Image 1 (cartoon, rainbow, N blue to C red):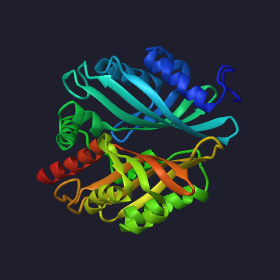
Image 2 (cartoon, one colour):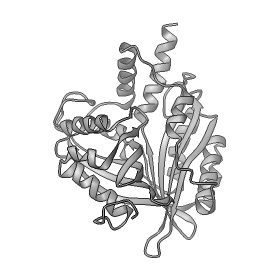
Image 3 (tube, rainbow, N blue to C red):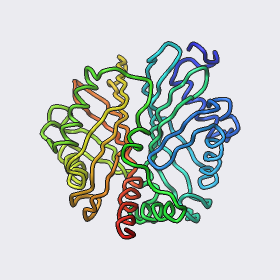
Image 4 (cartoon, rainbow, N blue to C red):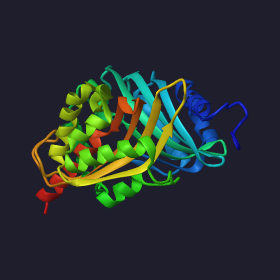
Length: 328
């Protein structure tokens, strides 16, 4: 890997090793070795714009979950520009909630949840990152309700004199280099299916994209089996947000002879909360889903899929809008 320490055999080796050193070896100070000084880390609920904020947030997470374990399930990657690599890293994380912090007082609850982190890596450092954590899975496992937790985040913002970003700013947060080029091949087919589903509720499109026996990992740590259950899950969203715009911000296809073909897509869906579905009574709130999806393919069909969606962010956006209406 041009520009990287010789110990790293490839992009996957680099990502897995630095993640292990920072988190499981508790080498938090080594973040300065592996992240650029002005590195951004963008999530649906927060933005860090320098390495010191990344260090601080990592310490905060370990304060809450001091025994956190991170199992690297997959790294889907590409070299979009010589010497600049793009990785999409899926992690299965487990920990015990033992400290105060973002999720409130410690509950001693064991939590298991997934994270997907997309990183741009150059010169032996991460220089930009997008990350989605399944926060609703964490919240449910510590005994709280996602909609109430999202409402509290919105209230915290209001009391601090802040507000959630506009839809335009949320989408801008999820954009960014490098340009992966026009969609093509399997990624194009899958993106077109998602667009038909999210924008038009055309669930019949799933018959040409997903194996009948597909396995889907969804928010709240749910596992969905088969197309019928997948349609039921997606219907909860499309009823809540019946009209919107689906955008693909980055995509990767990895084809390896010893593995299923794998696709990573970073995407967003901008809509309004005008229908009755998984997110309660309609409020008219503008909402942006900032998401990442990993898909495994066999014979041109999805057999396994992971949707990283932060539902806490959606509840926060909905609650913030409702609060703003009450105070007009």
